[in-house]
Image (tube, rainbow, N blue to C red; front, side, top):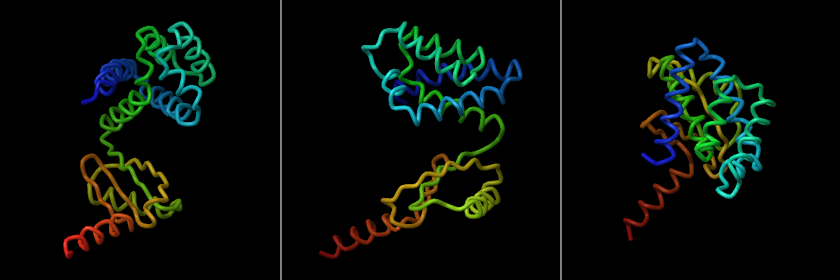
Length: 182
């Protein structure tokens, strides 16, 4: 386990338990989704949380503005301020992912990370979700990303299970087979 994952796991466990205890799991989930989204789209925010030269007080001020603009709960604000004080904001992306995983596990859901060569339609996503739900017997949350380097096909990852039907993987396999012939 990486250092970032270990740190994020401790914070995630604490805030998750507080949310469950106070029946605020839905609020926590919304906060984490909003925070994850802003971290994905804002390079400036990512630079602030990752920079060791930005002072704690400045990081805290930025987190206060982010919390205000996203209308985050007091628990999330306190978490962000504590992380700024302890110089742990660099683990924020991992923390968001860890909390999302804890919530999904708590609800008995699995997350499928889908990589595809082109954007999938709503019908294709629904059909894939239904197939995976039927095979695994659990609700499936779909995270779909487009990765043009796959050329075609899909890569589906659920926990430790990976199904790679991409053309890029098939070409790699063919290339390796050709090397063995030499």
